[in-house]
Each structure stands twice: as structure tokens, then as C-alpha cells.
Image 1 (cartoon, rainbow, N blue to C red):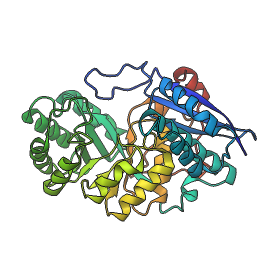
Image 2 (tube, one colour; image 1 turned 90 degrees about the horizontal axis):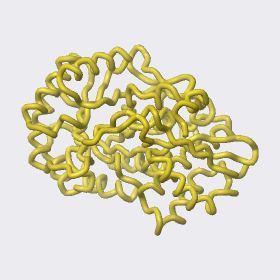
Image 3 (tube, rainbow, N blue to C red; image 1 turned 90 degrees about the vertical axis):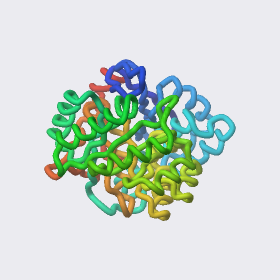
Image 4 (cartoon, helix red, strand yellow; image 1 turned 30 degrees about the vertical axis):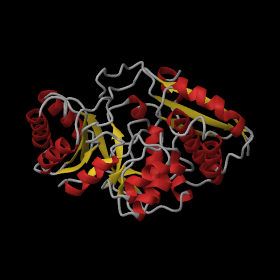
Length: 371
């Protein structure tokens, strides 16, 4: 079974606000789907958290190394692409494109073998995992409304992130966290994402440490991206003194970028995004590296239903996996597959057991959101 083409679908018209200072317009394309097609008529689907124009350019570079390759050897093929692009795409958009291709190849291999991807990654440790609803901070009143709606959707864990948290003053930050805890009560888990990968992030170690002390008073599960993503020394110091676990990793690509954060004990929780870091193959390597360093792995997933499906399968295949991120609400999760994922009565998501990723695309929805 050989690869004959890659079909690229940019998603726009339903893009949610990502928390950036300038906001995001629904027509912006920040996620792209890739369908890898074979000479036997079988296809697999992947997702990349990068705009279509960048994916098209990257796939043009990758085509000579991809077309004609076996479709049932995802780890070898994606590593071949990575090595071939070392001088032109060591990370960044080319690695994002490789990520989408790798996910699609795992979907293909699962379909060809008649097995779910989680089993092919080494075996399934679990059949379900807890999602946390991922939403943005807001002013107190609309924040209460958002949290009420998120709990009503069945989420028993919620992550709040970005503006206005960390953008005004400490008093505002605590008011927002207190509002959130009061709104959801004592039994819903809360996480806080400062969004330190925002451009020109102004805060350093001392702000992060004082904020972590405040968060501990409200039983926050973890404090995410309190520092710029490349501040390794800052993370080492913060993790050593923070009373709440420290998390980061969503913008890093390639397993080599994660190694110093794990080896130097810079984080309590590492968060690779398989639609950016190199695909399921690379995320699997990073997750195992984290496990071997006794660091919790939680996949970052501000993307699509395809990315969520990939995270679920990887969660099945890891000895320790506690959460997956679920961007909510978002048409790219709720509409682009016919049977969207929904938390069960206990707030867990079932891991698909059908071949491949266990999902299909909703072609009618793609007529609305695909381009």
C-alpha cells in the first residue's frame, strides 16, 4: 500500500478566540486537516495546528520524500521526512505538517490492520480518560456563565486561560480565580493557564511564584505557562519552589526540545501537542520520556476532533494518563465528525475502539468549514 497524494483542507469560519491580544476572527484558519491517500483507495486523516498556506508550502517540500512511500510505516516515514527537512524545517511549520501526516499514517495503518491506534502504539491501559474543558478567562459575570455552561456539558475538570488573567494586576487575577472556584464548587477540578507564550510576555519568576502561592489557596490542579516557553532556568527555579504543579510544553517541537525540561526537572507536567510536536510518533516518544523521568504527561489539544482522537489513543497506550484537553465549545470538535465526543455521566471520554483513529469526517460540515 503506497502513498499517492495528500489532500489538504484548511478550516475556517468557526475558529474560536484563542486569547491573543488581537483576538481571532472566525474566518482565520489556524487548523488544517491532511488526508493521506493510497493506491488501494484507503485514506487516513490527520490534523496540524497551522494555517493551510503554510501546510501547502511544507507539503510541497515534503512530497518528493513522501509520495510512493509505504503507508503502513508511520514512525519510519515521519522520521524520514524530519531528517530530510533538517535544514529547511527543524521545527516550525514543516514539523507541524509532518505532525499531520504522521497522525494520518497511524490512522491508515490502523484501518489496514483492523485495529485501533492505541493498540498499535503498544497496547491499551484504559478505555476512557478524563477531559478538561478548555476555555478563556473573562470578566467575572460572563466567566460565571461560561463555567456554568461548561459544567452543563458534562465536564468535571476545566482549564481557564489567558486574558485578562496576568494582564492587569494581582487583585484582578485573584478575583477571577475566586469567581471560578465559587462558580463550580469544590468538586470540579480547575487548572489555570497564564499564557506565557503570548508575544512580549512581561512576567518573570517572582510574579509566577507569587501567583502560584495564590492559586494554591484555591486548589488549582496546575499552573500552566507562567513563563515564556524557552525560559528553562526560570522553570527550573519555579518548579522547585511553587506550591502547585507547573506545566508547559505546548509550543515545543521535536523530542529533543523536551529533553532538557525533563532531564533538569523543570516541570511537573509536560504538554506536547501531537498536531505540532511531530505527530503521534513523536508525542509517544515524549510521553514515554516523561514517564521515565516521573513527570506527568498531559497532551495539549487546542485544535480539532482529529487531534482529540489522537490524544485519546495515546492516552490509552500510556501507563499513566489522567487528562486530555477538550476545547469547548468549538465546531472543529463538535461538528467535523458525525459522532462528536461527549463526556459520560462521570465526566470521562471513551477511547475509540474502531480501526485507526476510530472516527470519520463529516463531509457536510467540511463544506461549511473546509477550504
